Length: 128
Image 1 (cartoon, rainbow, N blue to C red):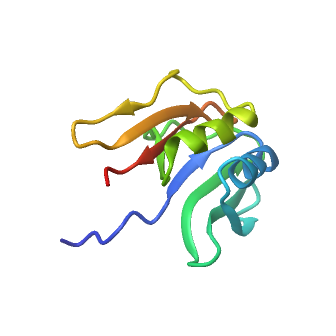
Image 2: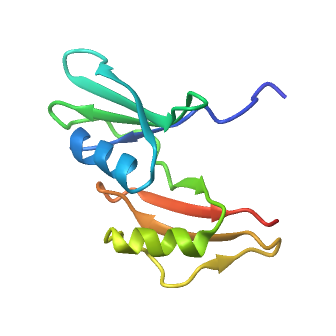
């Protein structure tokens, strides 16, 4: 197979500062790099500083006008103890799209919530 892993997910955002704050302070990602791609677009790459792995690329246009492109349904983040993470995020006023954790047939658990631009995010706890 040619594909080895998911490199990162690009998310178009309306306010780079707000989104960086959310992904750092709510999800615990590290800001790894940030720069202007060109005169109209700023980029921020967030992930895990220890490994250098980029997870999310935030894309912000200075005029906030981007062409319609493919839509990302959600970004899933792996957690060890989903119930504890839900309580932590609720304390940060995160809006969950459903009230209960869902469980897949294989025992994996998940729940969806919204980011600052309405993007759908997921906490995912793999089956042990």
